[in-house]
Amino acid sequence: MIIIPARLASTRFPQKVLADIGGLPMVVRTAKAVAHLDRVVVAADDEKIISVCKEYGVEAMLTSTTHKSGTDRINECANILKLADNEIIVNVQADEPFIEPEVVEILMKKLQNLQSLNEPFIMGSCYNAINADAAKDPNLVKVVLDSDNNAIYFSRSLIPYNRSGRATYFGHIGIYGFSKKSLKEFCDLSDAPIEDIEGLEQLRAIHHQKKITMLKVTSTGFGIDTKEDLARAIEIFL
Image 1 (cartoon, one colour):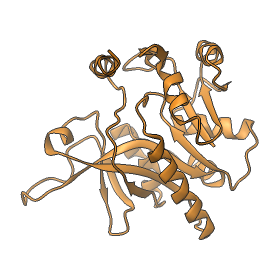
Image 2 (image 1 turned 135 degrees about the vertical axis):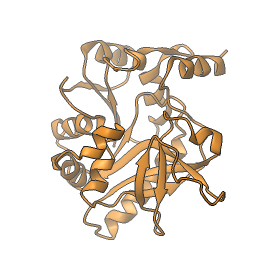
Image 3 (image 1 turned 180 degrees about the horizontal axis):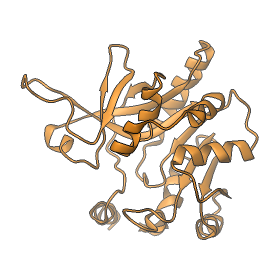
Image 4 (image 1 turned 90 degrees about the vertical axis):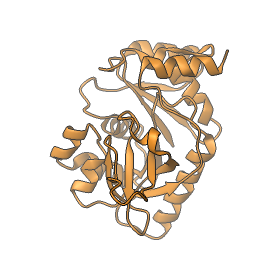
């Protein structure tokens, strides 16, 4: 199951999920990129998004306007759909129109494998190697890993600090996967102070000592965080 949370009133870039990307609204282009992998539902906070999705044949569902995070939004959607506790759910961001389907598929298979091993908490995401210049961009979230490729910390800052001169940097790719049971567990956790400081909801899991499995992938996709990103995306389709 793939659920795409879509919020119209983005604080940094209002209505960006409906911005035209090569002739398709951004959220529609994102949904169609992964539609062949599994059922895709857009979890929206506004009827305008629902209407646009229906126009292009994309399944969409209205959710609350008060959710703090996209993960809370997909949890509501999963509950409305009455998904089973063992359902694997992948959260693909609406502002990722260039997401590679193979990245989503790799994550889904990894989570299914974790489920077969009876892991008590199933949450995963992806990362790729980035250069030092890219790592300085606060819009590109960085992740530091332990020896088992679980996330230690995520930050908008440049991490790790390169005192030795030998640092390598990993950029977080903003897709998340859960089992339905673990998704509910994540959303039932109390907010973590650090998630508000960094503006990164995944830090809630780390704060509560929950494991986030990270997969290294090759990806050239990018999220649309700014109007400059949008201009870059439009350029690709010219």
